[in-house]
Image 1: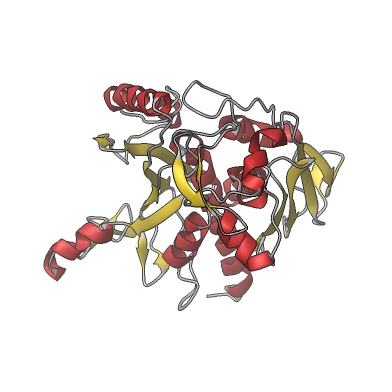
Image 2: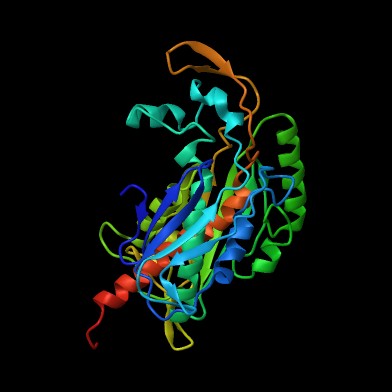
Length: 363
């Protein structure tokens, strides 16, 4: 059950980094949705390794295959299974991890929990697991667009290490985000970010940063008080991604520096509907979406696997050092943009279906 996410639109991901492949089973997708591999592949291409010289050089095409749940080009309402084979696995590069725990990685904790682990590239703890999430989210996005034609989910790299970008969340576009390999729509900041990542990689080190996200065209009413508040569900979704260390919505931690009169979002009638004049709430009030743009931020730590020697211990309890081999991202953020968008789509669709199921009586 730890690999299952969602209530009505429910996904279960499976597979290890250097096994035969990875994938996902989707349960709860509405029937009669036009769907093919061509709908899923573009986001997998954005997530895949080897797409630039600032990410892992592992060469995977990440070509998906729909195994079930689709017939004659439409979904059946039955479980959809999607498979992506691993074609460039090199488990021999990780042989030392069989006995040595990588600092700040999941090696020791997996061994402690299960008494056994797949040490080939981290196995299940590898970010390769997120392929299933991205594939499922491509399906979720199609359903969301059918329900809410104006909805738009965008995420971008807003900071790498100490390099900040300046981005207007009301104007940012997908084209601007995808205009460079670091996926930062601020071209000047992007250039500095790319140079910093390359420098860090040459030193055998890694860095982290921040990803910002906006959802425009949000419907009202998504979110389930008390425990399944929309921001709580988003926080769980984002913090389930590898390398995440923080989440904030709207004003976030900076809101603690404001007074109530400064922080509150006054209401007004605009275009015949209720709106807020400001959006320090980030589109969520009382755990429920209010129709304003959904704004949040996710923090990612530096990649744990680095090629510099580090102090560690072996599985038998002996002190040692480890300089990791294998292929890894010096900074996970450019590829994590797609993962943040994916988890957003999964949360929003699940809550949209839950809202439609609950609010079924005439008003």
